[in-house]
Figure 1 (tube, one colour):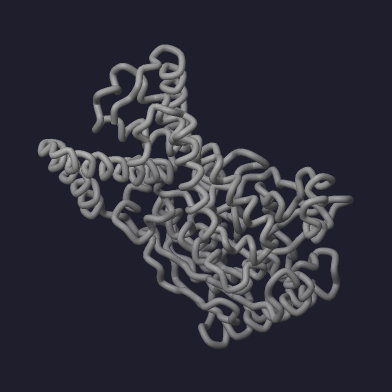
Figure 2 (cartoon, one colour):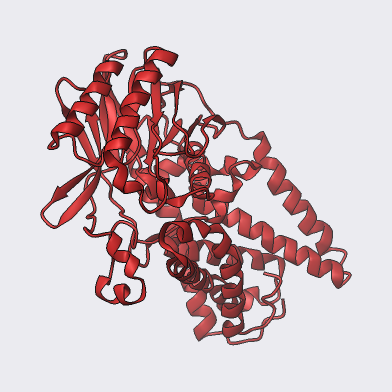
Length: 469
């Protein structure tokens, strides 16, 4: 915001691109660990170019006559353009990649309490607006404008302090459920992790036994994504191990596996009870481009041969992201939002699952390919944010960590270490009340994008007047 004083879209794009590269390269370092330097740099630059559209849109919008001299008001189109660019990243290209949005940086700050009222778009908007106000305040101070300095300072303070008085409801509304989560670990992390599929399933089988021995009876056992890469529905050895774990637990389990069909595969979570076999099944709706399937494989292979490690492309599931899980202690099924790995970054998928009656959030993930990076910690921050956004307890369980669970207020109650075999049990609340963000769904951000689009068109077509601030 401070750098965008020129009335030049080209300059704005350059500023945005430099900011984006500085932002994404360190935060997406884990992509280098998983796929190598070229994919890491390519992903970071691609995301930077998309975010560089935000300052371009802002420069165009502020050419509108009513905004030209209203410097304080300019923080609104700046924040709106920012959210519009983040929304574009969420859907394009190749299904989008909304990682490390501004909203997700606020998990431990007061602004997270705004999440139930407008979700990630609202929190990102407020973060960007506060940055804009800070730029206005500093500019006013340097120009000795003693009217705008206190106005900006007071507004920033008020926005940061006000959410502290917002209470978050954490009460159980539909009873509680005692979950047990098993982090089995992988012996050889990194790109070779998937070669240890049998061992990984065995680790989770052993972890389930330890869970019951050390924590007592639970109502439901949660395994992570890829806990049984050999599909227990068709592979006898995998079925024996999963059944042994189910027998030890004596309750249903949610099991991550992979189903192969013809020349494609599906990343799935199964409801498994060891007696009746498989109940509900959820197939991941948003496979990760270049990680779980390779767009433009013929051309990408020439630059990054490592893409052929993904030998069979993953297809997208079509059913909503929830499972109905029978819980004997409650005498009923509990609808569980099932958000596999990177899906936790996507707004609409989770909104739909909670709108359909999900009572807690379950985020199974496999972080084995990312080594000792911060990828899993970033993901846990998003899981905690979603807990607050939708007023639901949220459990993230990984093959290798970091795993943990958060209450509907985002408070973290358990956290495991990376590359350890660990288990935990917890009594979590089941909730039915839907937050405003859940009920409204994507419509507020759609409206914002329409306004931003109209502002851009108005600024480009009708008012090519130099901006001053």
